[in-house]
Image (cartoon, rainbow, N blue to C red; front, top):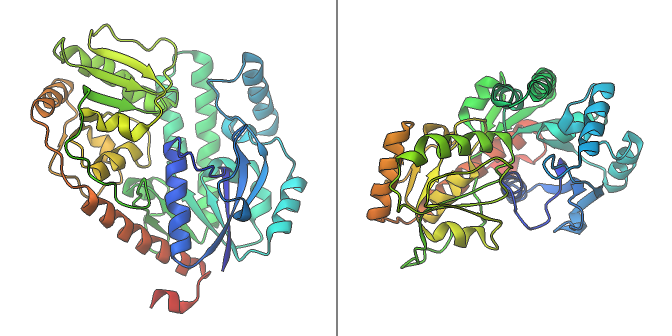
Amino acid sequence: MHLLFATSIVPDGALASGYEIANAAIIAALRRAGARVTVIGFTWPGKSASDPQNTVVLGSVDVRTESASSLQKLGWVAKAMLSGLTFASVKLRVVTDSEVRAAVERAGPFDGYVLNSVQFASAFEKLFGDRPSIFVAHNVEHSSAKENAAAAGSLFQRLLFRREARLLKTMEERLCRQARFVFTLAEEDRSALGVASDDRSAVLPLVTCAEAPVQEKPRRIDCDAALIGTWTWQPNRIGLDWFLEKVVPHLKADFRVRIAGGVPSGVASTHPGVEFVGRVPDAQAFVRSAAVIPLISTAGSGVQLKTIETFELGLPSVATSHSLRGIDHRPVNCVVTDDPIAFAGALEAAAADIRDVDGSAFHNRQVKALDAAIRRGLKKLGSLRQEVFA
């Protein structure tokens, strides 16, 4: 059967963010289940779809708030207020409903829709009511918006995030109500979205790569701890602030921490061992070069892809309990604590006695559970022949 996977940014092969890694894993699982999948959405400027034969590109957009000009940000805010859409969804309204509808019709017919996250579905909501749908909730977006509001540094930001939270709650409720089935990325999100029944939803255990990573022995260690992420995304920023303000002061002066990825202005550390290295050419090589990986999430919903990658690679880690959302099994070389002093102590202990494990068992377990959940959802949608599930 033919499914239209409607998403904000189509895969371009780069897998530069957790969102893109999750999308690749979900699309691959849908195809392993026997579905034909066509993806519709936008590309990043200067990028091309990695699978053009099965992709409908609506144009290119740059939805990153941190790189937008002040005039662009004001334009998005004004457009959101006038349209009643969220700030995130209005960024995608660079094409009209009729243009999207025409593109869908050219690529169809379709047996159903996979509405991937709330942003695209909200921006073009009226176009996807004529077929049964599955809703993929990467996060509980209204809860994340509430957390962002509480952590915002200005009154304007707080008000904007509160507005987002109100609109997102209504939109998520509607998408869940209209969907034949809902996929979440963490067990807790099923209850938060009001779809905890097994007849209504399932959790998708994710992987970051098609095959289990090959363990490299011995590893070359260049630093004690390494973090990489999109720190301009507010939930990630909240975790980074917690790490720098609460954990790092308890680390020894010679403990070396490297932080990769774009960092917002104002983020800094007086610890002599902390180094901000910006973008790195090979994210996996970067984390492999560290003795231990701090998994520092303290806000947001959904699953932490960096946790999954760390476990797939078999690397030692110290994790907050929030970093283990959506993870049913953790390896023996992962220490869990939410106490900053204990977190710092566990990092130092792990760096002094490096213990890698074979991550292939974790990866294979995730793939098996992912495929089973996808089959359940597709069976509910009624889009696959019965023999697929024999």
